[in-house]
Length: 124
Image (tube, rainbow, N blue to C red):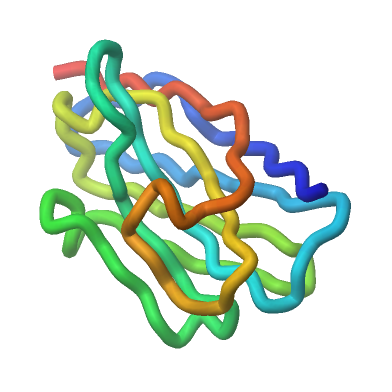
């Protein structure tokens, strides 16, 4: 079993920056790709960014390209999401996810473990 714990959410003004962290614990895999997703009330969970185990491959949703950066520190089993130039439409609960594969994926169904989520509010 893998436990994921997100942190770093909160309130930020439009144009500001925020960094989310996701710490993995438990039976962590040395080959897990990881991702960030967001969800707003009444809508399905959406892909934001993903990173391979090595960190050499990253995917981003079109809406965040150039503004968000995903990275990981495998020594600390932590994944980060640096969010710059925040927009009010970025307001959502952000979830960290891990999968038992080193291959990056944008699909929620392909992730095996999820964190509880951290809320992010961007004020205009």
